[in-house]
Image (cartoon, rainbow, N blue to C red; front, side, top):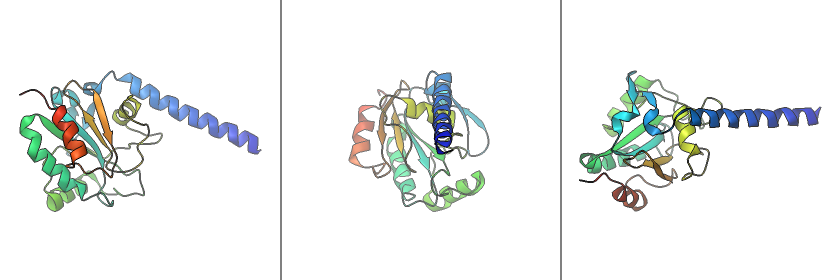
Amino acid sequence: MMRRLTRIGVAMLFFAGAQTAAMAEESKGIYDFTVKTIDGEQKSLADFKGKTLLIVNTASRCGFTPQYKNLQSLYETYHDRGFEVLGFPANNFLRQEPGSDAEIAKFCELRFHVRFPLFSKISVRGNDIHPLYAYLISQPEVDGLIQWNFTKFLVNPEGKVVARFSPRVKPDGPEITSALEKNLPPL
């Protein structure tokens, strides 16, 4: 019986991995994705073509939640130079993002005065991983599965993922700002 369960478990892991890879292959690049905004509108990531992006999976009840303030600061500092922060709430880790899109938007507005684009809550890991995140974690510049909230992906103006930063790296810290400065669109 144990041997059979092990085979089933391995088969399920293989299927989940193959499914994630297939979703990532469906899209050729970051600009091929359309995502739902936190207000329910469909938004093509092609609208951000030519800009430097910091894509972040967020949560409102996490120890890293104060990073919303740092993300907003980074956004304000670099937005006029062709930079966007794209926030994707996710409830994958200890149910730290339980609210509805409306509740998340209100929380971000009232608590952190967030002005950067927020998107509808998605899954960033598991069998229901959003195709955007399946694509992000499939890129050679990153190290696999999302481990926690506030993982950050830096995308250059050509749409290439150039770096990944752990949740512990502050958005406006030197590690990110240095990489960001090197990848801003030409003036």
